[in-house]
Length: 254
Image 1 (cartoon, rainbow, N blue to C red):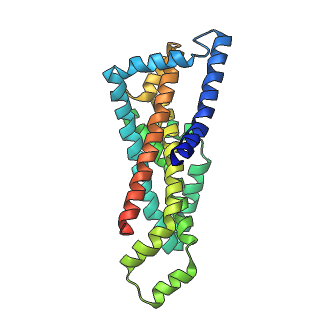
Image 2 (image 1 turned 180 degrees about the vertical axis):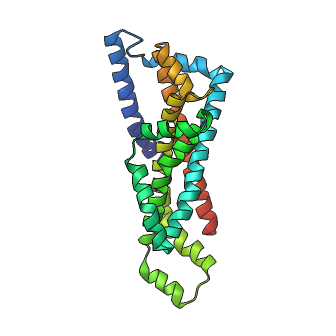
Image 3 (image 1 turned 180 degrees about the horizontal axis):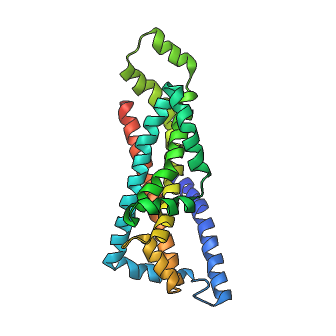
């Protein structure tokens, strides 16, 4: 019975993907032009050929390391500053204009400005950090600000040590906000990071490969790289969520 339910759930998830792939194939057949729209079969064939080339994996590694570095920096700095802003209101007021400016400024403007000061090889690190930082900072601050006041008061009355308060009160209360922040921030990191590479064109990056595919009108290759970015981004998000859940289980003694 459980296997049937599982199979039904799987079908519910798969059929929308199949539907849109069929729509994609029909549109490609109607246009009948690889330059305008590559078909799913042409894209898969191109992707398979790319998988067999070492430069493909080198480009993924190059971009993955830099975008993840920017994300990790955003998580560490955003979490620390979010906690400081919760404890010290002057810090919150000081950071408010900075966070608002980052939120309001277009990614393209940041890429062009940062490119003046930072080498193109490290451009995606800075841009990923800038896009992820406000998300992490805001969510951590919101999670801490919306904690149960009665529970906090109880920890003060019973003089519970800070270490235990941190482990059993602060972290469990803020972890849902942290998970949501990581999920959103990772998506922004990959989008903005790849955009930065397309403009900065660092040698050996995914952005450079995409730009070259566009220059040579290789639409199947562009689609193949796009699928690769989506797969790597989703995989990265799943791994981060697994790591967060693992740490939480350890803290809770499971």
